[in-house]
Image 1: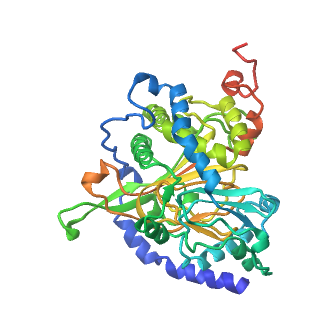
Image 2 (image 1 turned 90 degrees about the horizontal axis):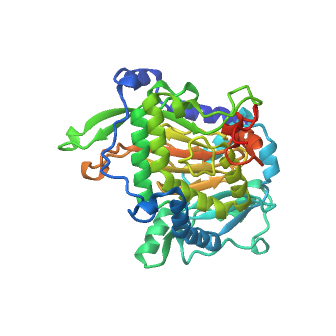
Image 3 (image 1 turned 60 degrees about the horizontal axis):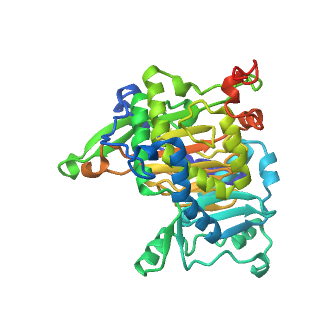
Length: 451
C-alpha cells in the first residue's frame, strides 16, 4: 500500500504544472478583486411554478403548486428507480471513522485514480448499505426498459472486497450517457427525474446576480494553487483565433440561517456572515432566496420521497431556526461553490442527507464516490441527495465551455456547485423546538418575546 501511495503521489505531481508554469500563469492573471462576477441580463423573474397571477406568487400557493407539479414526478422516481444493495459496506462503520483523515483520504484517492477510465453512470438510482440503510439517491435519467438490480439471491457468490461491490452494483453498463442517447434514438422511453431546465436557468441567473453583489471568497483550504482564485474562460469572438479571454473570481458562499461560531458549540445559533456581509449583499441574499424558492421547493419534494422520516425532522427544525423566511427549507444552510475545483472530502459538519446539484457550462466534472465505487455523470440538473458527511466524494476536473452570446443572457461559463445542508450541531439544538424559536429566544438564552 505504501508503495502504491508513493507512486500515486509521483503521478499526481507529474500531472500538475511545475512551479515555473504556475508562476507564468499567475503572472498574467488579475487579482480576484479585479475580476468581478458580472451581473447577468435578466428581463423578468416570472414564477416557474404556476402562472403570473398574483395569488400564485404567495408562499402558500407556491408550496401547493410545487406539490402538484413535482409530487407526482417524485413518486414516479421512488416507484421505478432501481435499488442497489452494497454488500460489505455498513453505515455505522462509515459514520464512526475519523472524518477527512489522511489515512482514509489517500486510499479513497487511489480508488478514484483506478476509476478514471470507467464510464460514468448517467441514470437514476438508490444505493443502500448491506443493512438497508439508504446512502445515496440520484435523480437523473431513467430508461424505461432498464432492469432493476438483481435480487441478492440471484447474484454470484464472490469473496474479495472489490468483487463484492461490483457484484451488487453492476457498474454503468447500460446506464451511460451514450446508452441514454441511444435509447432516445430508438424511441425507448427515457424520463428525466432531475431538475427541469427552466428552474436551472433561473437558478443560474439568481446565483450569478447574487455573486455580482456579494463576491465569492476563495479560502486557502479550498484551493490547490493560487491560480484557482480566478477562472479563465473564452468569450465569443469573430473567429476562433479572436476568441476573447476573460477572468472571473472564484470562491464559496455560505448562506446559513443558524449555526454556531467555530469553537463555541454551546453559544448562539446565528446567521452566517455572508448573509449580512454588506448592505447591498444583504439585499442580494434576500433576492436570491426569493427568486430560487421554486427550485428549493422542488428539492424538498424529492427529499420527501428519498428520506421521508428525515425530511419531516429537518423541516420542523428548519422552521425553528430559519432567519430569512423567503427560504422554504428544509435545509438550514446552502453552500455555493463558485467555479472552484472540489477535492476529495467528507462534509465535516453534516450527519444527515444533503442535496447537491450543479449548473453552468463546462465539460468534465463527474462525481466520484469511492466508498461505494460509483462514478456519476453528474450533469447540470442531476440531483444527488446523499450522506455527504459519511461518504467521501470528489468532483472530477472540468473546463469552462465557450457560451454563445445569443444563448448566455449574460451568464458566464464554468461550473457552479450547490450544496443544501443541515449542520448536526444546529439540528441538535433546533429539533423539537417551536417555529421561530431561535429568533424569539436568542437560542434559548432569554424568554420568548412572543409569550
